[in-house]
Image (tube, rainbow, N blue to C red; front, side, top):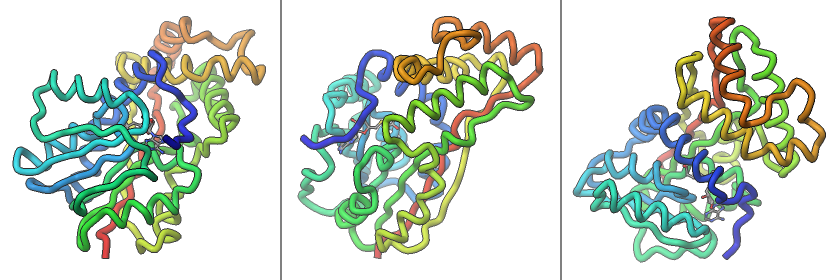
Length: 269
Ligand SMILES: C[S@@+](CC[C@H](N)C(=O)[O-])C[C@H]1O[C@@H](n2cnc3c(N)ncnc32)[C@H](O)[C@@H]1O
């Protein structure tokens, strides 16, 4: 199976994806509603990972609709067991690389979150995926903008770690400003000018999910940051980071903003 996903599915990455599901739940749900997901639709969620976007879509399409999640990695097993645990009856998961995916009939919508940025040719992927949607159906993708993560007021340890995370992602060949490019990519794929929305999780010292999410991203890339010489000195290790962040954010009465999520969608002609 062909995949260029560089972040792996070690325990820390799965933990991060599950937290990400919670932290971005409201923004993703809002974007899918704006994109036009409705009861009764048949939806394909590509790069479904542990299944959070599929479950949100399943809620919106209801029992008369259905969602098929697709992922190249065996994280589909985790998605399937979560679906059983949460008693979803309208969601299935298939293990397949996107470029090997065959559907029996076109769907009403193809959706995906944080998948295009991992593909070698996102424009070709958009073209291929639009071909799986019935005329008048929806294609909707969400990607983030790591470059605009910030705190107000500036928290030095958060800034240092955020910059190290950005440089680590870049060293993996990932584009840290991918989200804002969605409009261009849709047009290059011949899909026309998309509608777009942006939402970012933001909070203060008592938002443990948000702060833990920041820590888990740091844990994920820490070995890479070490290799780049971006750790040591005053830079907190992942195990030290949560109390440091909580203390500094509380003392400054600050708020942190994690990567804004940008969603673009069009009706397929
Ligand atoms: C960052 S995760 C996002 C998971 C999920 N969409 C979410 O938002 O929680 C990206 C997922 O895309 C999958 N993936 C990457 N390249 C793929 C490909 N070519 N075909 C299918 N899945 C792929 C990875 O295995 C991974 O589970």
